[in-house]
Length: 253
Ligand SMILES: Nc1ncnc2c1ncn2[C@@H]1O[C@H](COP(=O)(O)OP(=O)(O)OP(=O)(O)O)[C@@H](O)[C@H]1O
Ligand SMILES: [Mg+2]
Figure 1: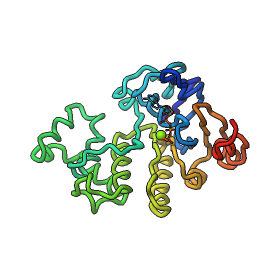
Figure 2: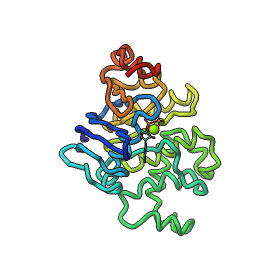
Figure 3: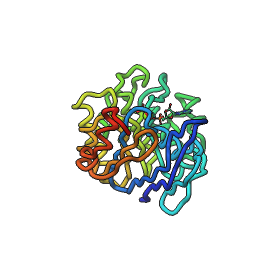
Figure 4: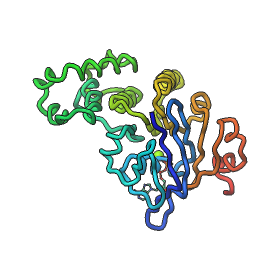
């Protein structure tokens, strides 16, 4: 498994420097935290890593491979997977179908095309559905397998997104506020899953506003504020950092 490394990465939107000279490492087998107030640039970082946005400066490495200018599908194929802050599912398709779509980056014939021919083509990919079912078991979602994804409660839709991201068998998993809208019990359940994924060797980047959750899961946390990385260290270290406290209180920067 490879580390993801960002070197001096910046993103300018017109007059706004949304991300400024950011250095960040997501090592394999660990959960790395990325926190910061609204508008700090967290999602923009994920969008640059995944090839949705071009960098203004800097470079991004996955192991010894330079993915700075790679297109989104190339980044996905290289082993970087993500969830979206705003859930993106096929609302009419079932939970199991949504998860199986995640496998498509590793399937030669277009599974998307196959899925358009539902349901007869489903029988042609029983192996994928078996693997999809295993993911549903892992995330405690088997009872929803046949439910349309769009009809699920918010927390359950988030799980479907995560299963779909994990279905690609990623080296790096970028989670953009995965437990937003969940209660503490649901979040803790997912925390256990994240720990299992890290134990399997995946490098996770956890973007989260729930500081307690980050404290429990991350050995290392980065803090972004107004596009700049203002602190990094253990959760304890960053939470006692005066610049971090000022950023969260909206004080002087
Ligand atoms: N495509 C875009 N065009 C112009 N400005 C953008 C674009 N995307 C983001 N921004 C701006 O860049 C800044 C960083 O936004 P970003 O969404 O990365 O923040 P964030 O840390 O993810 O915030 P939140 O915690 O609210 O999700 C914000 O000022 C935002 O308005
Ligand atoms: Mg965001």
